[in-house]
Image (tube, one colour):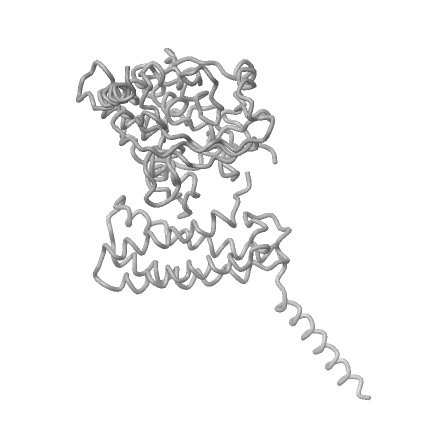
Length: 289
Length: 153
């Protein structure tokens, strides 16, 4: 094929892939996907943190003890975004933390939580992402400490700390609790900030939501019942909707973003489910300094 | 010399000395408690306004105006509690308060300016402008907290 035909061919394929499928259920449901993408706060890591930033083109710095990560461009652009991906590529990325070319993703991308999202929900999110406006802004390379640049080391990390697989309902619990668990563990990925991590950067599974460090290095509180019992359901709901605490204090910058982007859009049933689930967690003491 | 006169004068001098020391420098832990008390009351009177500004509770212009007035006085109070002698006390204040004191003063001034604006706007009839002013005050709380406060784990 001549070059111009190649360009046209790829261009037409990309256009067809990008063009919304309408309300076809054969792919995912775009409206449901939009809701899930908001609760998952994709925009938080994949958009610059400034006025007028273009959604999903990446550039947001995530500082960690291993270096600074920059969320990539996830618009459907064919050259610098994920325009050439198929739905299966996206599901594989979220479920297993691997790129379409087989390389491992750094777990700064919270696939250890997203792995629990169900296939159907992943399809919905994918359908929504296809409707995002493509943008040609290239992704920024991560700025990592020497040792931590080697992606193949991630396989070792995964072997030690990562178990892929979608969320499974606990048959002993009510549907409301299972829904709350799914929202917290999978989509909301609350543990990525609220669970303390070990020296290799993996969350400590026996310290779920006992408090950790946020991406800005600030302390993130313990939200197990040992702390949460001080607030009523109404106060928790109010905080997750407005960012205002019962004593009139306001959420800090990072959590305020989470509230604006994600928790404030939770449907009333989902909000109740989330709070009900949080009330049932094991009571864990604060992290010692 | 008259012994009685001497005793009286000596007692007076000692009493004045005690009084002067008492007023010249509060103990650091007391200063921390007092500035935290001022902040607590700011939270008390700001809280209801934030809900109103976001449409989560019914808007009451009288409460807004009253609370804005309280905040306008309260928000002048914490600052003399941030004395370097309190740096080693247990509190949520970060060392940056003292190492970056110019910026700390600036965000404190910005917050007072935001509250002053709220006071004047809340006197008028423009609910939308008042809600915007409340939002600006909330932002000014965050502007200081994000850089100068770290709640202990």
